[in-house]
Image (cartoon, rainbow, N blue to C red; front, top):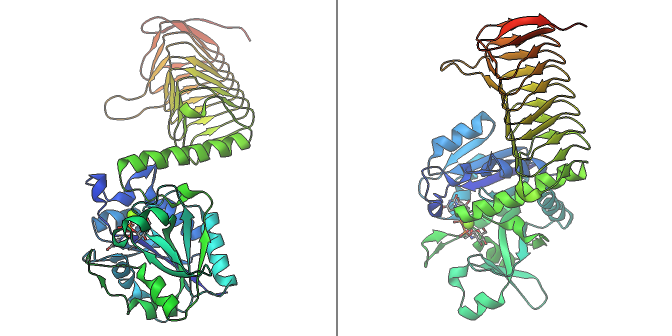
Length: 420
Ligand code: UD1
Ligand code: MG
């Protein structure tokens, strides 16, 4: 099978974002837009990716790291010019070239894989993705002959009023092209006199007139073709991706009471029969066990680990902490850099004071310890197994409360011991 390489077009300034940051580095559900596109390329079986950059190239390069080749486009002279910038890297390459735009976070790997598969099955020279949309304004439209064969892509600017309304099949901006055919056609693309840009979309008319085979694949879910151009588009993309994340979790056995107000990152893992109550935020790299109840109004911050059968409830925040099985953290608590054993009870209003102004310090709480309401644990601090901290206590910095001790007061003093 032919080798596949990818070109991602990302040199645009993204003027409508009104931002100091390059458009492709804006985040959707915590992940830069460009990362979604890189994932699509990989899912499609691409072995090498070239990212064409212009505006704030260094920022994009820093994000990409050494795994991908960054190609500079000096002046943004259009999408065909952007592809030409990569040509020297492709000399001698005879496989297929996948061309993607850097601003399409909703595109799925599944659809692009299908595009590549169709391209190879039909032995087409060029296959591109189309969609039927209600409002095609702004997009390039697909022009076909009476037999349904593709003749050209016409850009919105170059269409008459009637054509604009009647042509509803749009060009999504995803192409798979045999490298030799691409090299041949790029030479022939002339500057568009209206926009003073070289349009990659002109390759379709040139190829079809030259007798080369051009095919299309139509994407069913038109949202997939969305290019993020403004912050309004960004919010729309966020909503779609958030919904995808939640659906995956729900299909995996997690109850999400109100998907409208659950904000959960892509790489969060949640066990079966856990219930996510409304207004809950779960950040990246969090793991939640089985049969837990999380929320309402809970924030689990990056890196937290929650065991099985745990309840973390109203207005509780957990940050870089691990919570063992069967614990209760049900009301108004902050756990930061804390390590809880199993069956710990954290009373309402308990706070681990983890930050001393310079360092983040750790709190350790042993199995079956009971922390009374409104206590402050000034880290670094430890509370032993089965120990009890009375309500309203302040366990001061550096204290080590032994196993089964009963301590209370401000500062907390050990008053007695619990029997086994
Ligand atoms: C393009 C297509 C249009 C299609 C639409 C889909 C052309 C001429 N038109 O239009 O048919 O319906 O995408 O969203 O291709 N870029 C560069 N260098 C440049 C110009 C653009 O890298 O000199 C990059 C942009 O950063 C962007 C992508 O190419 O990621 C597409 O460019 P954009 O200006 O958004 O093209 P559209 O007008 O949306
Ligand atoms: Mg665009």
